[in-house]
Image 1 (cartoon, rainbow, N blue to C red):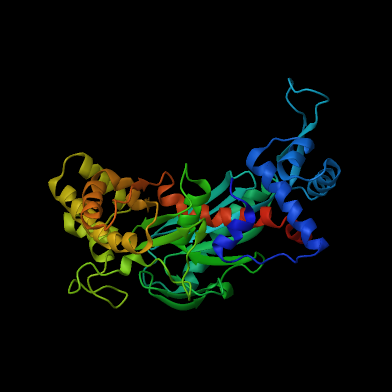
Image 2: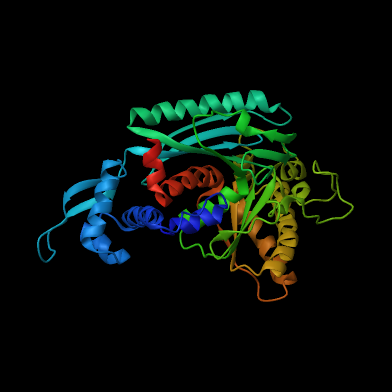
Length: 403
């Protein structure tokens, strides 16, 4: 975890500024200490003080408070070889508060628990379609998964600091209401009223959480990029200077509903010729002449690797459609990189040639490079869980107050 937490909270748009007084300064400094140890630890108190520019006495007081709160732990003397008296090495605790991440997909439900060290400590998944199912039975099943992973985590000495849920749809600025999720058939659904009330809840678009996961966990990902999260639907997260670009209503990034053929097939969103109708999983399967299965992407990858001409042609055409839609975004936003994530990242060998050719042909300036996410389909779930973890690091005093 390398980015400062106050930036992460600003990036998600869900944080609140701490008061600019002595108490607020103390809370910010607690966060600075916890962040520093999280990013660079194990570290001694002296090393933390040198990193953040506070006195050793001040840092020692803050460290003692974080240890009492169960957020830091002492590992014993630092490794030998250092000059002077060795200090006690500090590390972020592997017990205590943790983040719950959950995802509602069109064909799956998933929940996981991530500790303050960024490790996934519990995970559960249920496969099965959620398309056109009422929100109540879906959220009941999701709640069962959440309680399962929380119980597993509690046996390991962890407790849930919050719940973040990724949904493939438009989410209101209140962080709990699904305004529209066409591939689920949901409209104006208050998930805050349907999910466990004992956890602080944040709901966001799955592509946004995927983009944040790329920002926080990606290898060398720049701070200006366009993240494409593609499964049955296609969404995008626009990250500018390390922050999500949300738009006035919070709906920015609906790449899947950018028309690539104005008179093309009808889309569940109400438009015609949207990108999802050419590059979403189901569209590619139709074009390849394949029936939907439990792991559609694995099927497509296996057939493409085996040289199936129909599958390769379908993927090439999907790459072209992606390139057309992305060209408009690249010309408008000028990102440093486009990152291909979600399930379609597993199909990159067959998508990228036509996608990159279309970008090179249509982009006004130099062609924008395209990278493939190493997080793949796990990005939204991990981004959700890590958003809770990073909120803990941002304001550890608030978490200690709830413990």
